[in-house]
Length: 459
Figure 1 (cartoon, rainbow, N blue to C red):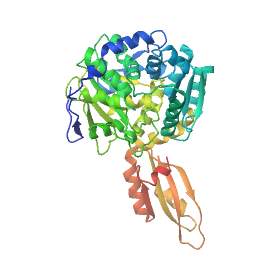
Figure 2 (figure 1 turned 90 degrees about the horizontal axis):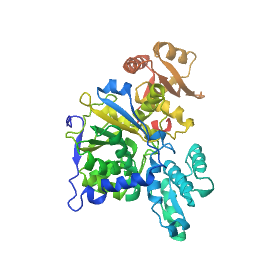
Figure 3 (figure 1 turned 120 degrees about the vertical axis):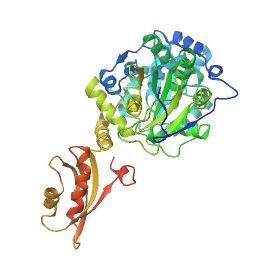
Figure 4 (figure 1 turned 30 degrees about the vertical axis):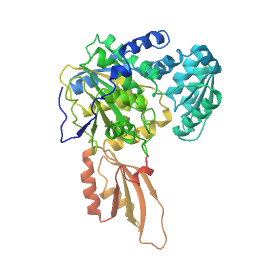
């Protein structure tokens, strides 16, 4: 199956739980029952071979298209499985949830399907497209409550509502019923590939999806390797594995909004810990990564994926396969670039959702260009004299380079004036020659590197 290369990253292994096994927390039979409950409501989504990625990796790469689910994400599975089990008194009082979008759509759909009233608490920064879809799925059965700008504020408001009204909270990932419903994805994959699944790559946010799939695959296909992919800027599961328990991240990059979670669920963590999950950690993620697949069949590993790589894969999926994936939906596919597979292995990547706001594509393209080394920003101290800009254009820019941003304000009584310059290269290899020409020009120039405080204001 390959090996973990110590020169690339180190492996921090969490010992198998001594008190509870994965099967004691959640069984494959639990997930089979969940599949029966959601049958007829939740769609069996396609499993499609991706020729492009298969050619690149040498393996048979399949995309599990949860973006084609009825709410364009897998979240309906867990929400409906929980809500269909409510008692009549619980249904009468109604349900409450907090969500940045996809879970809310699943709850809204389930509310209408089951005739249950629901109140959905949203952060104020939830994209309009997702708000409109929530209303469309829930109709008269749901009421949207917009809170402050963070998910934590929405979650706190939902908990207060439950305490005051007696409504049932529908968690997005931290409930065995939710996790069992999400685990039905693994059941479908095994049926669609007739059990011949070598590797499954799963996006990780709060951990419900990978926990449910782990519980099922460990029982029904123990030789299947499971790889979780979480965004570099919100690696809460890797943090939990390192700390041997869920931790709350102080800061996160919310770009991969469907997987940007400050703290993973206690129950999903317990399932992964009991299964012996490990974290592959890196000082940085290179453009052409070479992190091999886990060392033994049946292993479970979690790795980080750079947000820029996610953006590049979103664009590749759209341009090549016509797949409109949201950032979290492309997370697992983007992780393939860090892995090595044996020829002809069957590898399934979960495209977890397709609820992308089209207004975000400008930022997606920008992040992708930066990730590929094609877009760079500089602070240039120009001499305040006629012809200075012309000399910069003639002597510094290469024939295939282009200025995409130029901000300059002339200062009186100064010899020089600062300018912010954005340059798009014809090829990533053009950076070193560009830097050499900048040094030869004699101008004072600062290259703004990704990850620095100043760079965060640009993207």
